[in-house]
Length: 336
Image 1 (tube, rainbow, N blue to C red):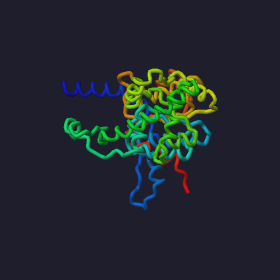
Image 2 (tube, helix red, strand yellow):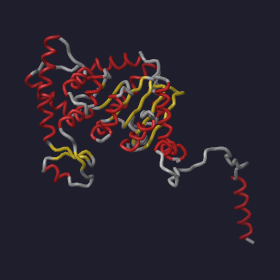
Image 3 (tube, rainbow, N blue to C red):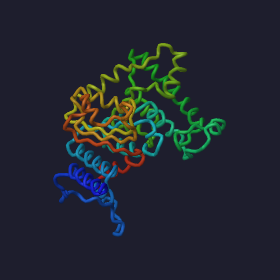
Image 4 (tube, rainbow, N blue to C red):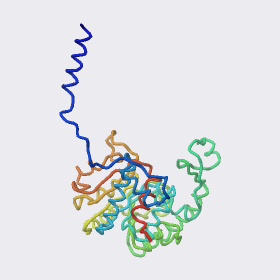
């Protein structure tokens, strides 16, 4: 008797919480991946990501949003953290800058200095698991599984001290304090390497903003240079004025934001002055649970006026060394 009552209670409870109707979602896109049984075609392969689900679908959406930026002739801001330059993404960024496919760069101090260092001597592939103590004892620095021996900074130190000397003389002669984007443009001309992002940015008159220029090896070298040249200055206030004025003159803006931190926020904040980006694509692995801007989704940026409420947008939760080259291939490499 008790068993029958229990079964009846279960049925009643199930009926109470059952859906009122079953929507079969006929006509919705079917989840499916690329068919490797047929002859391989790279464009078809990329297009198949749209129906893959998860972050593959977000990547496909990002490609379409960037295509829309280009089609609508939006001013494209590319923001990236220093590890993008540490990695092989440097070559992807250089391609975009060399071919004038982006209009503005925003990066961290490491994105400047590591581009210069790699123009002088390359980084090498290592391992994540290697002992930090062992590397330290052998004069090797580690960026993930990328190794950077100390001698690279010896070359960089020599190059920068000579460079600062020239900038200092110009500062004295012209009675002018340089801001970071002006210093970076001079660096692009000074490095004279076609492998360099900064070289092509200077050559193509693409501004490179770096609000945190002193947060890195460049800052260390400025400290040493300033000991003997106490009146040497860098005008950080002009950096803000320059990027805001540039942004205000844009009819439409699109943002491709790799990673997070100061470079992400600086470019988003500049777009507040024009009521937000019209298009934006984030690529990072940061999460929002700690309330940091680094992990914040686009919805949070909308609340601050950094992105317009009706902007085409997507966040791709993925290592940018995987997602960004695919996005470049899908959105920037024109078919021949």
